[in-house]
Length: 132
Image (cartoon, rainbow, N blue to C red):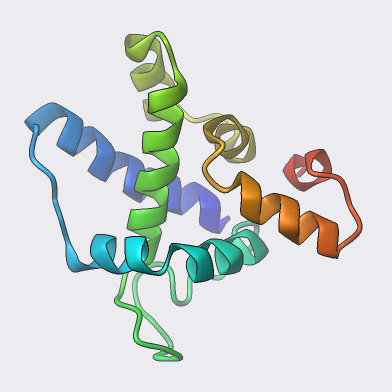
């Protein structure tokens, strides 16, 4: 699923920055921050799909987005997860060995507002979103 691949790619960026102390600071990350609301809303509707279009490895040119925004959103989810954990060593181990991408996302809390809004539009509970 799209979420899994975004977590793998963005998680690698996060870990690289954590180890090196240097930010990748790519254009994709700046664009992502500037368009968080639009992208967050879109991502929650697509993250369970296998279609990577407009998120990883190319775009449809439907808007001005850069390639590989999935790296950015995966980074942000991973960063949020890491920051919420008290035991940072354990958090690193969990980031490197994500077993359930949906539960990892839930524990990160990063997209909660968008998930709640999306689920409300479908008349479903927040927790229903995280069932495979």
